[in-house]
Amino acid sequence: MLRRAIEIEPDAITLPDEPTDERARAYVGLANIASRYLQRMRTRIAAGLISPRAVLVGRVRGTGTGVSFGRFLDMLEGSKGLALLSPFEGSPTVAGAVLEGRHFAGPERDDAFLKLRFDAGSDDLPMHAHEGSDRFIFVLSGRGCYHISPDPLDGFTGCGIAHVPVRERDVLMFPRDTIHTFSTDPEALLLLSYHAPYIPLDDPKQYTLPSTRVAPARLPSSVSAQVACDPAWTCVA
Image (cartoon, helix red, strand yellow):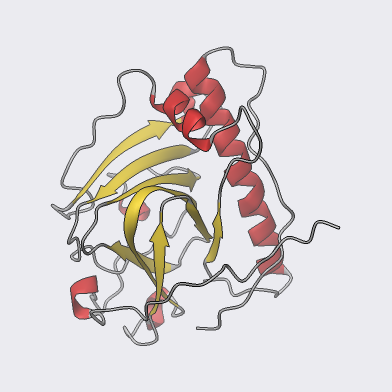
């Protein structure tokens, strides 16, 4: 798959004045930035600038004093945190919890965040697609690998899969129908996945396996390792 830098207008997480509940404000702030970036991705797909099954990878970080991405996450989880349940999507090494927007920020919302944990050595969640919703994912902690196929669901062969190393503070976004999965090796991986829209986990339309079943355990055992600077640079002058 072709790897190249794509310029997207920068954006920032801001907390709305309403609602007044702290968790709801954090939910809306994080959901809003994910929604805006997903819309920019869709615009580029419609214009033919990127593939309809591409993944865009970036980084999130705070700049300046008094701001912290971690603070928004703490507000979203609340004092009790989120209890993650396993197995998730049939994998005993994956656990998850759902935060539906309609429960936190208003009954009109149709989105959700899922907090997901891939245990160290997780390599059994097969390549799959979400036919009904787009994804924006924050990597909260750990390291792992994101695997993506350029094939459509009805033409998936298991060949040509790209492997993208991910770590804490990386962000990924990709459109519905993209065949993908995650795996881990020595470290666990913790994700916050934004679903637009959210399709309940027990709905058959939420998760689709292609006819050819491929799990990370069948993929190459290593990814080309390197230490390098990100390809995108910001010019301040």
